[in-house]
Image 1 (cartoon, one colour):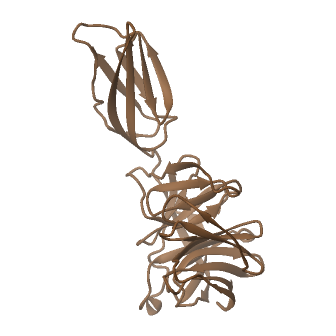
Image 2 (cartoon, rainbow, N blue to C red; image 1 turned 60 degrees about the vertical axis):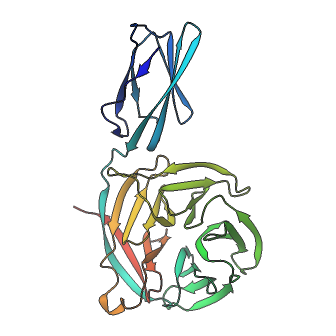
Image 3 (cartoon, rainbow, N blue to C red; image 1 turned 180 degrees about the vertical axis):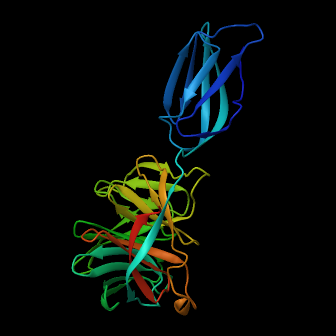
Length: 320
């Protein structure tokens, strides 16, 4: 009875509106139309023309389902949309405040600052993975736990006195007493494990895609997930994470880019390019940038990379 016209613009920005026409060769007017997107329903009555606002729809590739009702009969049609962020990311600059020695044999996967000038570090690779307590100013490893050789350690975060460490493809994580490194439990998750941080409510996990997954820390039940987008498209290869003042900072794997993500909607608010951070004299036999830690006392970041011999304390500021 009815056919749904495809929208002229299939690529939209968050907040845009998109219109659809329901065409009937017999010039019928439907009794009602219910549009569903991501489980949300948008009803229209006695209309052949529907305008849908994307303001309350998350970003990403969306299937728009039309349920058209007429005289007790129902027809279903599908259309596709892609919704991007309506924000052009601001560009942050950085100032190096200090530089420190860092173990060049550490394949850094996770970094977490601890009061007293120390940080916890998760180092990866099969047969080489470990959990470490490191003195910031000297790079000295104060405590070290060797991870079973069957696991490739990944991201790291702290909840109370418990360290949560991910592994890559094993979908298994480890919990440790942060003061002794005693293993006190394990947990599982639904994807590969890349980065992890804690926002005070959820453990936020990345898996190398454009998604962030929000887990309840006491049950590891998946509560929800969001797609991360900027104004150009999906931001993929999201790796190491750090939660700072209401935003998630994320390394983008294989690049020197760090993005600042709004965790409520997945929009990239800002980014920073660290491509000139590591001086050339240290650049031999190193891997990519990876490792973000935040010192809330001085509001500085610690930045390093996989197999980097240096760790940098930096201050971020907005480009003028």
